[in-house]
Length: 376
Image (cartoon, rainbow, N blue to C red):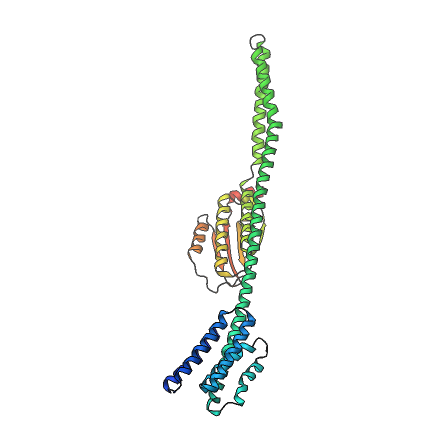
């Protein structure tokens, strides 16, 4: 607000200076002294931070204006309205009353300066009102900015805590899995290998004295070793998840990470026999969904995105839809062209619609061989 008020004072000050340049007066030293005293007092107002002292300086400035008006030059009264506004605005909230008070000197002013004082009072009131309004708006925006900073800090802290929790959970899961694998190999495989080793040691000792017994022990050790190897193969096979499960879980993880990071609500639904989706199809589905997410952040202003993977009889339908502003005419950029090229590489097709939000539909064919496997 101070800048607006200073501008108003400078305008009035410049008007007085121009008047005295055009109409020289005999008491120039007193006029200059009054100008300098007014400048000093009004600069002091904005340098002092103590409210009580500021009020005292305001009163001194008003007294100096009145003295200059009576003893030096009547036009000094034009500087009075802006100082009155600053002094009494904090005590009077109603604008019409404030305007009435700064117009009161019109009752005892001479007709020579009455019109000019009215204009100065109107200018001072308008600038002071605009300054107060601008200051209130600025304070409101600063309060909003502080609130947003607090929310961002809170979200950042929450995100850091979530990431730390995820890291700890992953580490704990790995430790538990390593412990489980160690126990499995010890119980199911270690015992078999130990038994086979004992029988081979016994066969080694009997090979010269009882050849037939040694061969029987050796054959038994071979059978135990084969069984142990088969147990290892079955155990590892059971541990390794199928590619189809990796695809759906990777997609879910990517969607959850996007929703958490960007504070956009996401829903994910899958229907049908998703095990039929091949790894290369999962790869292209995920890359295309990432591209759609990126475009939604840039252009759509969406608050929710839904993803649906539906396996039909002869094709896989993947639809990504948001509730954003959409587009009457969709312009294909590099991202959209890249999606089409990726999808076309596996004989698929992309359908884009911007009439109701923005949606991208991928249609991927299912081969007859895969379809037969699905029906078995």
